[in-house]
Length: 262
Figure 1 (cartoon, rainbow, N blue to C red):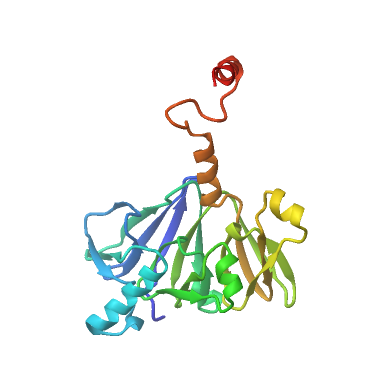
Figure 2: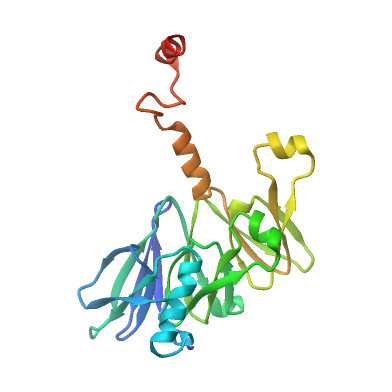
């Protein structure tokens, strides 16, 4: 293996965290701010990019790796955690919001995964966190995940986080599935991704499902989330108090008096 070989265990149900077991000199790379806890003998270091050897040597290679993360809207820096002790040590990373952590063995997934840009949580050192350009402008502008998605490449373990319940769908050759664009978490590199406009003006404008949905064609594997963070955030914002008053969702007699006072 080119990547470090790490063991792991996932704890929890809806607010999960992953515990990574590191042998001496093994390293895991994680998003800045995702650390939950770690053993004393683990050294933490902030780096440019993803720390993979594929970025090339020297300052220019590091800047190119970090530049990929800027394009995807992620932080300029990532953090490495290396076991400098004599025995096995552990480091844990927590999910940023309610959902599931998906372990992905890239060696068993043809070495390449395409995922939404904020899904990556952590990975074995050597896994490349790059960018995946959507070749069609229509897909980029209306596809929900923007013109750019993240690309994870290598032969090690990677951990992806998504909201709600996660459904894994294995597509046969030529099989097509249509899903809400925000519900797409990740897919193997051989899945064909496109978008399709919702048919009918009335359905598009008043159906509440947006103007487009994603069309995924097999063969390959797709991971789908039941609760995109954008959907959760919009519901929280809609229910929050507006202008210091009561929230929109409050009812009862108090809400009735407020209606007449307005």
